[in-house]
Length: 390
Image 1 (spheres, rainbow, N blue to C red):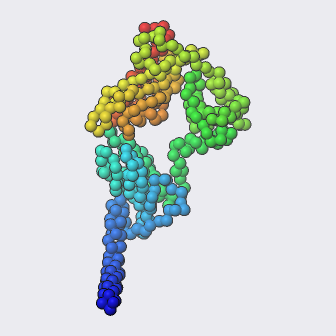
Image 2 (image 1 turned 30 degrees about the vertical axis):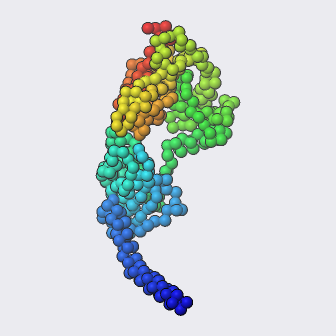
Image 3 (image 1 turned 135 degrees about the vertical axis):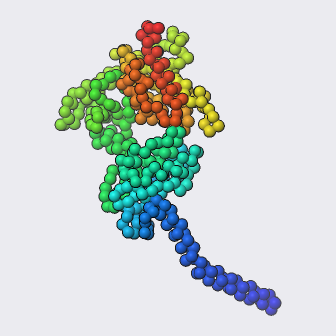
């Protein structure tokens, strides 16, 4: 019994000594570790703001900053700010550090970590040094890495905006989608914040787009930078000039109807045309397929999907495109799938059979662009056949 007690005392003493040694070691090494960590952090900060004298962390929890901003540091000599951002390019979790001086000019940008495929983001930050907001817009997007480099550019823009806000200024940090959403709600509050863009089958003079409230309380018509609300009964807000233009447009939309065309009588179209309809006014709505990268492409990085690009296009009897939209596609993510964005397919609106090919191609996705044009070509050809031509 005495032996056991003695062993226990010895064990306790050993544990006590070890604990004291660990505490002493931690007391000595903790400041050194912290110093090394601070040195590494300062190294990253100095990489994007080389003339910085020192940096202090800024509490951003109570500020409304771009959603990509995760950390912010103030240069202690008043030279500006360093912003840490998290964004997604072709992959997710791309971490970028960007320095912005007190004049709103980028002092440096670097990608700290990423999951991108091609690695273009590793040196892309070099393009932004000494650029202001306008200069960032002028930086070329890298062909073949559109998604990656666009995400990088947007992150740098977010850093510039964040620096303005951190400096006490104000800036509109809403995305294009958020601005559109707010404009629609302001124009027609009765829409209860739910709108759907209409695919137009009738020509509407000087009108860029029409959105319908999902609760059927009315429409919002976009004309340039104007957003005009038209209630379901056809009334527009007081003070709107030429209000009849907008009420007439809504009346024309409501009166429009589509009649299916049986393609069984047109064997030459069945291989390329998904469906065809005709409006009472004589316009055609064609869904056609084109062979993009999904059919013609395929490599070790981006395999082919074996799926066609399906395009819906409204065409007048004299071969002018009223509206165009991508119905479905399975092109390469981050490259060819840009054909599903309105910034691409919207280019065809207003084009004719003579000039529909005169659009900006998707960077790094030639096969996708050509396949889309093929679908438009087939839609024009279908209209000719349906009108009784060759």
